[in-house]
Amino acid sequence: MRNIFTKLVLLLSCACFSAPSFAIMNNGVWINDARSLFVQNKAVILGVNIRSFNAQDKNGNDIIELEKGEVAGNFVNAVKRLDELQKQGINTIHLLPVTPVGKVKAIGTAGSLYAISDFTKLNSQLDDTTNNMSVYDEAKLFIKECHKRNIRVIFDLPSCGSYDMYLANPNLFVKGADGQPVVPSDWTDVRLFKVENEDGRLNEEVFNLYKDYITMVQKLGADGIRADVATSKPFDFWKNLINYARRKDSQFLFIAEASESWCTPVAQNAPFTPYYKLLEAGFDGWYGSFFDFKDWETAERMEKELSLIQSVRKDFALKKQPKAVLGSFATHDVVSPIMTGGMPYSNMIIWLQATLPLNSYFLDGFQTGDAYQYKYANQKAPKTYTDDDIYYVHNGKFDIFNFSRKPGAQNTDLLSDFVLGNRLKVMSNEIVNRGKLTFLKTNNPNVFAYQINYKYSTILVIFNKDLVYQSSATIKLKDHESSDMMFPVKSSSKPVMKKNKLVLDMLPGETIVFLISKTVDSKNKPQSGSASNPVYK
Picture (cartoon, rainbow, N blue to C red):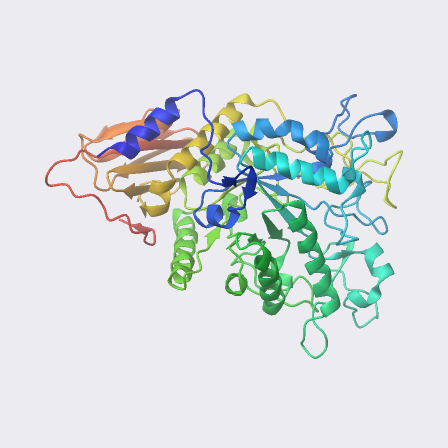
């Protein structure tokens, strides 16, 4: 009766681990399963910028100087890192935009990845010029090699066009009262697409650009799409585009960059489609509000977010349209967790994503503690490939504007936890996805605690949200017996059990994870396992 618990303990104790294969190979042909993987909360996603993914910075100044013989990341040398990702438990790669970028009114010396200038081509910056292959064939090779390692590949779909694109075809863009193209938010290097005509109908010319993009990436072998600022397109736009993609591949995944906390359009002239309507249009998942996690001061705020997620999943399950959420704790738009709260905060993110009913998301470099600090940041550049001669960088954020170094650092302890957390996520999916999530009361508001029960197994997670001071707390466990077996997955402190109460003195930012197996006798009944909204007990 303790099969799940026993398997988890054995697997977590093993030094060697490789994630089980979920995808299906048919006579060596990859069969996409990205949607199924995602809606079951089994995806462990790594965000990757091919332009820097395996770049070779020979002189150590963080910038890739092509004229000095240094090599930027490309689709070919990216293959060399895939075995590494597989061993770390990554089963999905999110490719940040790989399309050509604008060079006029640009940001950074290589151009922002999100300033798309062509929907039907791949960025020539990602070509390995030492071979005779086209960049298109190199991309196909990269995806094929990912699939060999049971790694799915989803492409980023930019939301706005570059200024170069506006100059080439002004009719594709919205114009303001001054007759100039609209700049969305503060994204000075892009302009807002005119997705609707004055009569409210879709602008077919813009829609066809997006169809062309879907056609291109599906021919490359892509498994899905992450839609940048999906809220800036209307319901019918996405419904038609998603239907178009799924006529060819019913498992083609669509993730919306959208949050329930977003309520306004990116510009006065822009449409706004809330996250729930995007899910109704066919998106499989959304971002939630986890990018605000560092500012959540109470466990009630976290409970509220998880309750919403469970409620949305239940609503769509009744419609036989399963949905899931992305663990958007640290994307390329967010300051590095190492900058925010050091290794304890990074660890917290690992274990939350491993034990909550959501899909894990990390940015390349997270696993080794990269603070995304660049020696060249915001200095004048001796050479540029755009009309911007400044190495523009957001402090503490992933560089998407220049030919930057390979992401990484040397934090092997964090990497070990990263691998262990991903291992737990895969192996405990049945507990997390089918179990009952309950938030536990503590006598210290800085200490958050929750447990997930499924049949005779429980995952208990406790963390000190205070990143500066130690926190003492007493936590009353629900349905706990002194005879229950407790296996520490992650713990630096030494909790003391007094009857059914756990007494702790936690380090700043510390996270504790236990696996618990209940004693089985004739009076005990396994829990039904039906998911419910998290509640305090």
